[in-house]
Length: 335
View (spheres, rainbow, N blue to C red):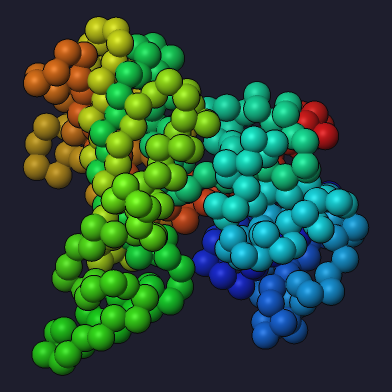
């Protein structure tokens, strides 16, 4: 099994390496690929240092699976080239809504891997990934009618530069100095910005539309979803306040049981001080954590949830590796 990671020097690429090492996937040869400026660098994996190859002239015929973790522009240019010789798992948004490319969260819709047509599989937006993994067991039982979600997203969702800027801005504010934002529309330190990605004509941001469109594609196109996405001065982990309306009646006991028994979910819901998960608690953990589970008494069959997950893991690297594991387990039955 030969594997390549495009964007191996970035946040998600390095996290994929961590996940691969932790899960001990059987790898014969590993190829780390990045831009020309990163070519020649060394990255440690296991006990060995691997040299980074230049994407511009990398030979994808050497590999069976290629992870793309370098953004939409790189995927647009190189993913189809890689897909001529290897199976591509793409972390960018470029192919997500392509009808010929399955958008996969393995615990939710692995059957869609039967429909691989372009040798490309898309990884969902990090906010969508943690949302649908919590919604799936509830939808199976009670049939979701409508979802209202507000996200509280960490700066790592924007890459390494925003993470560095959060630290830089925080120091400037604490020292009483003026802040000038580089990667944000407003100051991020000690602030909240209700704006992620570009605005569409109807006033929603692209991030908000992604959550709607991707949830429909992955889970059920009959689900109505509306989102407000907010960037917070947090390094890692996304949180979501979720209001769900079901077609059928439910009980809190059955909700908690369904969530706890579903792969990738963990209920942490004690009605005491600290009896819930926060972004710091979720950092570095594989699970999607669900807290503050309670009935919404203002609507029929309404439920409120608080969902927290490490966005670099659940929403990106871990999900991508789980897609690869599913394909290997099923002998590449999608090809």
